[in-house]
Amino acid sequence: MNFNKLRYVIVVAEEGSITKAAKKLYISQPSLSQCIRSIEEDLGTELFIRGKSSITLTQAGQAYIEWAKATLESAKQLENRLSKIKAGAARQLDIGASWQRSAALLPEPIDRFYARVPDCNIRIHEELNIKLHEFLKNDVIDLEIGIPNPDTVHYVSVPLFQERFLLAASRELYIPSTPASPFPKVDKEVIRGKPIVILQEDMYLGRIFRNLLTDLNYIPTKISECHNIETVHKLVSKNAGVSLLPDVSVFHRRLADVNYYMFTDESLGRIVAAVYKKNSPKTSDILNFTACLKDYIRSCGYPFTVV
Image (spheres, rainbow, N blue to C red):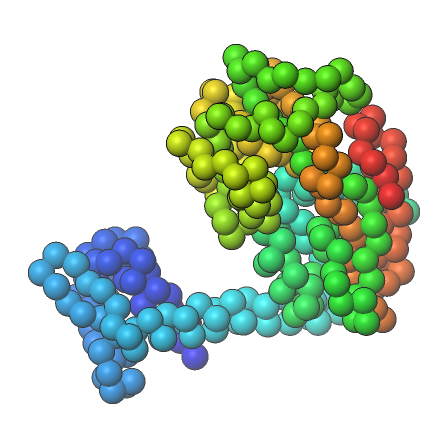
């Protein structure tokens, strides 16, 4: 299969223009136009509606795009699995984590793991939790650092710590609180009347924050929405609004112009676990790495609630 053709159609759809897509793909516009026409002829249907200034997908085109993206993702997973097979005796442990958990939690445990198991390499996959679930299911990764898997028949979830969702607010903003350790405590009602910085709804913390606002029956008049938790952190520091941040974000990097608060409602949190498939051929390496990770979390100096 010519995967380049699939990518060409996807990029044309994303750019909405043959000219822009050709520039992005570093090919000539006539060559790209001819390629798209050739695909349409093979399929016996048009994928795009050509306008004077733009190009849009037909219903058939939308179906083709969905298939093309799924096919490219499947090919990527196959490539990863084949690379493991080709590696033969060279052992490798593939670990998946969100980029923040990866940066904050993995470097030190990896160093400890190499001291214990010098003949096993590690490859890190940084993705959203929903993507990591699929990676583990399809054997792209061997170990996921994320949310416990509800399927206890096929997966093992080793709890690591109880992650708190903290309220983050600019130091310029007064937040009534009660002294506590490691952060002052606040009632969730303090969110009322404040501008909000929030992750998009397809992200777990974005949904949690929206549910909290619904529970408070509070509709903010000013909302800043983004897809990157580091951007959320920076927006809070510039007093764009208050937001929720997970423990690991604050452990990874505290900003001097941001105050952090714990909620009196302790249900605002989640368990973070090491998740792997039962009967995995790499169980020994997985358990070794998990032990290194748990040791680090206990000794890192940040008050994670270890479980």
